Image (cartoon, rainbow over all chains, first blue to last red):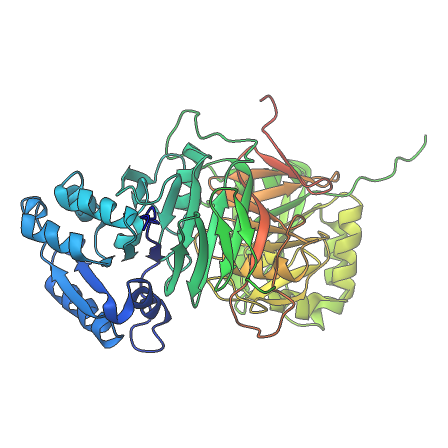
Length: 273
Length: 273
């Protein structure tokens, strides 16, 4: 018997406010990808200053949707993120779910700790990693911390910080259309057009496979901003905070079933079309 | 002495909420283009259900900024739009300014009347035509009447109506970033990607020359949506109101001094760069 190399687990990255009392298509898909009745989801509510309520709520939702086991991981400080008992629970999980709150709490508490390391390892061994809202933002190498909403794009006004490193060469934004965030995502992409901007609406998610193709789940849309063809930009000129110039940005609007190949930068029509 | 063919007048199309107590760069430019001390601006507040206040305010602003003459045209009904005295005042103007309000009031009251005809003729003879907010929307052949804001783009949810026909093959939207309107503009473009979408922010304007190139004025940005390269769309499928799919849209973000050639679909860097 020859051991197969493990396939990295999928990511489910949700734009926040996912359906929790209707069909729950996104949460249901998370339960399925985490192994269903054989699965074990660890809920991490580190993003929240009051983690107990959201942690218990998601645990209960995942159990209702048929996951074998679900538990709440108590990680509200860096000390807890070094606790071998907590690390062991990450190591036994088939899925890890990050709730919403403040993405800087996730990275500032977990970054570089044994829990973070265990998370990256479990993912490479095939475990699902999912997150909503702040838990979505924290997925990429570089994450948006904040920036102006419902405003014209400005230079250098979008605050960025290092994320959890589960998705490379991309920047995620969430609550995207609902909070008028295209300006801040464009401002982030202008600083390095080699990065793909992914704006995820509420009750909408991307499911990223090991081949770095993603498929859209949920009721709204995902906006992909591809800056590789940008010809004119004033991003590097003086005067931060002044209006941005940016030409020849490629934009894709993708609803449920549509997808995108992050390797080639090509949108994908629904299978069967 | 051979008579030269007249050059069509410029358009100044403002995204609403233009500066009225600072430098007033946009309104100042309108006064300049309308002929300054030799000019005569007719203010048309037809878009407003209570036209007197906005009409008098703009008249006073234009006079303060040095226009030779400015008058308020009383057109709140189709009967008034047939009044030879009102038509004569349009014919004597060097600039016509449309205030904000409801763009359907402009088109439903003026559409097809002698005032509308005189406006189109004066423009072809060289008069400036300017408008803000609803007065901006009404400029194009096809205008946006309304649609969802701060939402993912949906199919067929953006209401369109015939505009005043001063700008062809374009759809204007105003208060653009400030009201999260990119979804509704994308929805309009999806219905006919041959049309250029022009989203104008508050205190920002485009100045369209007779060569169909425009330059951006004001403090924020103009978003141009070019759909000619769209590859995948679900706009023509069933289920209106369902999320839109749209790939390979080209987007340009243009601040003051940048421009766009509506004939070729190419963005223009500031002159001197």
